[in-house]
Length: 436
Ligand SMILES: CC(=O)N[C@H]1[C@@H](OP(=O)(O)OP(=O)(O)OC[C@H]2O[C@@H](n3ccc(=O)[nH]c3=O)[C@H](O)[C@@H]2O)O[C@H](CO)[C@@H](O)[C@@H]1O
Ligand SMILES: C=C(OP(=O)(O)O)C(=O)O
Image (cartoon, rainbow, N blue to C red; front, side):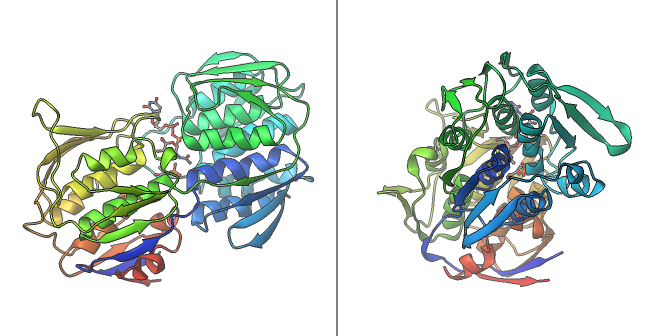
């Protein structure tokens, strides 16, 4: 497992281009299984999770051709179903959360899918009921196979559209049901669907492939099933979580930074939420510019009470950014309550920030109160281990702002979702080296 050695206290300057979106990529690459034709995808991030999914598709028989850096062609003409039933498929699937997204396309096109408990961050319970119930609503049978620790789904006579009200607006659950519904007979209606930009992008690709989905961008999707889908081209959006991480990094290190081509309309409430921490963020064309700021001061609510920053399904704030908000607040002037509603084990990394001198009270597994230093005291360097991808980037931000040299172990967690992060940050003036 790799580690980062970070010499803190260096300001960043210049501009950075965000990578293609990790969570969009996992959906889009899975959707290539829905047709025999070629799908060309550009702005694919070169990150561990995406590369693992590409390798899995390759082993499933998908012809994968790299056209240029970040652009691939996928052709799922001959899918190797015996491989999908193999132990190796299950083992590889368990390495990443995104593998869960193969289920919808497999059941829709081949009438068979297997659903092992996927990998991804260990950040609390991550139930899969919404996926399985949704696909069963379309007529698939589902059985738990004890020795494979997996659910097997069968639909030998195909799937049939129906109305369903999801018990929660699950992002990957909505994507899976959508990908199953596009090849189902008749009309499927999904109410309480997740509607974040990456789901919208998936709908856009599927419609370009010949699907008939309406209501895109809302929580009520109507899908008129079609017999087959055809080839298409697709470009991934910039990764909004990476954009948010760079905003936090600029604020904590007191740097002036331009984040290029962020697709502002797809950032939702991210920019206004950082502004409530007092960060000066300027929107210039499709770029974000953050001037260097010595002090940033957290707003209160309008009645003077302490601000809460919390997550919610889109168009609310993504839970994936709360660790960054938390670390940025440690050096702000003022106090804030960070409330992570979706996941119950994502805030425990605050212990590491407390070791570095941050003033944080972990109220319970979901809530932490941060009393900012207002940059009067900087954080102290430390040696720590990255527990999950977003805590990992938050610790990296903390280390970059701290006095002295810090070490972060297990940075493979960060590599799951951030492309060549140390090279890209060093090009802006950071001092990060990797130990393998
Ligand atoms: C590969 C991928 O795309 N991963 C993302 C995806 O995971 P994923 O699709 O697995 O997450 P879900 O949207 O299913 O839900 C995440 C968690 O939030 C809870 N929940 C969900 C909806 C809701 O209305 N209320 C609620 O409490 C769920 O019970 C679950 O514990 O979406 C999450 C929520 O944006 C992100 O953190 C993950 O990065
Ligand atoms: C939780 C995340 O990823 P995954 O769903 O892949 O574990 C994330 O990207 O923050």
